[in-house]
Image 1: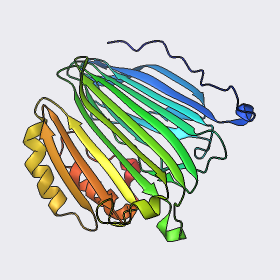
Image 2 (image 1 turned 135 degrees about the vertical axis):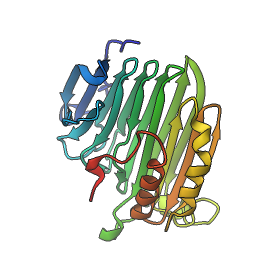
Image 3 (image 1 turned 90 degrees about the vertical axis):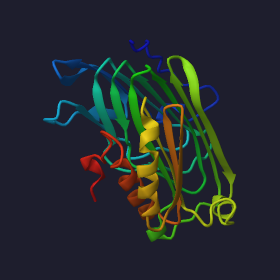
Amino acid sequence: MSAPALQFEPEREGDPLASIRARGLASFSAAEFQGVTRRVNVREEGALRVRFPREQTGRLDAVLVNVAGGMAGGDYYKVEIEAQPQAHIVFTSTAAEKVYRALGAATRCDVRLMLGEDSRVSFLPQETILFDRVRLARSIEIDMAPGARLALCDLVILGRAAMGEDVHTLDWADQWRLRRNNALIWADAARLQGDATQMLAPKATGDGARAFGTLIYAAPDAEIFLEPLRESLNRADNCQAAATAFDGLLVARFIAQDGQGAQRAIEQALRVLPDASPPRSWAT
């Protein structure tokens, strides 16, 4: 599997402030050499950087840095990772990603992951914080070989509760596609549009949730981790969660009234899965 040529030319027509919008690209591939995963190609553009701390475990740790300090309306970011056969990558970010209000065009973020045969990727960015009047459109595209293993978590928090922030106006759209051996095995689309605080207040929708997240584990033996994961979720405090498994895919959902409850539950769940313990940058 080889990464296709990147096209990094987001649409700018009709945006009078296009020249000051932030752009960011982080793309890299990694390969296994005698039991050690090493980066092969790295490409950085605009506001995104990727750093590789030294580890002694044979895997490649990658940490994403957004030097723009957050995302705003009209910004465009793209992350692309290729794990060649037998490569082992753990990806995270230096801090929570903050997405600020948009006065016009939406913020866009695209993620693409490519996993070769017998490769392992843990894609574990820190949480995303959405502020009032945000407009965010994000896509996650994943292509896996049959023997590859993927752990991916995503946590979204509405405002900073400690600062008394509420999110009454937003337009958030998320789309995930996961393919194994070129066949679509998981498709997920979600959208919140309007007053998020009001929409998530009833028990039927969010029971007052300010944080929500998803954890997926895709591997040939993913189903065997379902019961241990459920046991972990049953021990979670200040967080509601549930999990299911099918066709080599394990999926868990989380909702909580604050980010801390969801974060602790996700951290506990990750420790159940192989090669998915929370990275050091998650430490508070």
